[in-house]
Image (cartoon, rainbow, N blue to C red):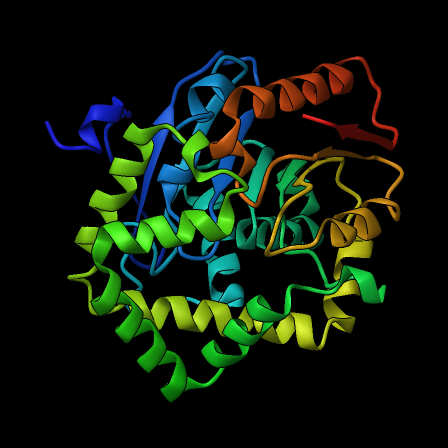
Length: 315
């Protein structure tokens, strides 16, 4: 049995949104909400494998692969933020989903915010997991200089292609996953080894896809532009009226927690939970704690409690 099959995931499914879109679905109580889980830059549906069964205790849970990521080929579709927002919107339409709870990590959180701003009638709630919020105004809340420099490199087409190609050649699939987890997780050893093995297997598959590197760079460039020139994105985030749970790792090296705090304080119906000892992918680092936070928010919503609450979890 290969590493992905060993996770016991539901079978792969495909939707047609101007081309095939790969996803997996966990069935849940029909009276519960519908969760659509949206991964971040360089991620896939596997980023949700540790928590999707827990979400499915409450309702239907769907984890998709964005265009150019996971097993979804771009085809004639773009792979930047704008193109993948349109794909997310079309995915919800094609599956004829009721108003959904969008669960977005990093770039997936950004896409979820864009969808909530443009189509609020389709989004009943947001779970924003270390979302790529607009960069904080405070000097102490700016991104890590090394991370900012890497994204600046990605913004150059030629230099970015060379860096990604050399990194892939040098590290191979195991090294790519190891290095990515070292950047994204506060403690990579906390992640289930079976889940890590599945990511390595998918990385090995993706090394044969000619579109993988260009898709990554296109998405990275569009994120970089939104952070360098954040005025329009800040206005969009401020305009969102959808209730949200904002979960952020206190040790996130990619998106400073100051960005989450600055965004959350502008919304009376957003709840902020900071998991102090976790990094950029808390749903993989501490899935049980992550689910406790989500279930608590769902219970609060069921009781009609949407007011802003800030919670600091010392871990």
